[in-house]
Amino acid sequence: MPVSVIYDRTVRARRLISLLLLLQLGRRLTAAELAERLGVSVRTVHRDIDALLDAGVPVQADRGPGGGFALPAGHRSRVPLSAGEAQALLVGAPGAAGALGLGALLVDAQCKLLASLPGDLRQAASRAQELVHVDEPRWFSDGDDSTFVAELASAAADRVRVEAGYREEDPQTLEPLGLVLKAGVWYLAARPPGEAPRIYRLSRFGSVVPTAERFRRPRGFDLAAFWEQSRDEFESSRPRMDVTLRVAESDIEMLRAAVDSTVRPTVDRPGTPTADGRTELTLTFERIEYAYTNLMPLAGAVEVVAPAELRARLAAAGRELAAVYAPAP
Image (cartoon, rainbow, N blue to C red; front, side, top):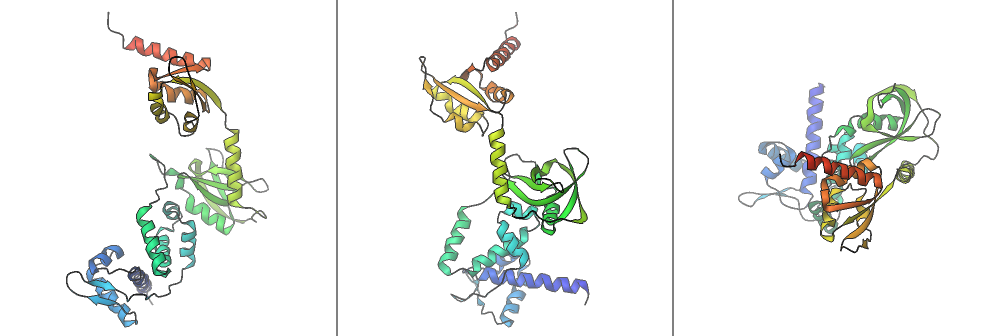
């Protein structure tokens, strides 16, 4: 049988299943609505409805205004999940599933799961879908973190070593153990052969080439536990410096908006009232450069008390600005 014929039959079979699942969601749908959801013509929808009827599916068709297609109340066909759909459902997040090449399978799997639920649970799940939408990437993300997601996920699943160029270094052999999506950024848990696992950021890979070499996954390796341990170690090992400043109560919201999200919780810590009616706060930054960048746009809305180096840098910047904008003699 020609490949094109097999492909056409496969596509139609998947479409008929999707049509059946849409009808099992419990509400009447017009031919136009079904055509839009399935990406086909209205004529194709009518042909597919006839095919379901020929297969013994009791589709009810009402003609005229307000009509459409529906299944009898309580009717539900059992449609098993494929292995790919099960994987997509376990991944869950749409952006992650899409990067792994499972986006379409996730939609199919969610439809199957929703259609298999009892009526009351199906209604509750539908309401949840209407109220919650997951948009994983961060604001202004350039999207370069997902370049090698599919290749590395496949290598991790098949336990195949890869030759990977990282941070403009010479390619090295890595054994991919799993992927983590954190706040829109992809990370890889992997190890050079014989060494301890570590975390790599995907956007820093310049190349990833699977090899023919297989590896054994470390006994007892747990991706979630390893990630949590690595995350905690990273957060506790970050450099920290305290900045003491004074700010008027009316300017605290502006200060909160100006600092990085990692600093923001320290803005909300209780402050100490000062004699001039302001509040003295201690904010925690990673580096003095970050503190300078965050606080400089606030001009005189905050006064840095310590460290002296940061206070001196802000004062110098203020003098430079005053000189630039001073009236001409």
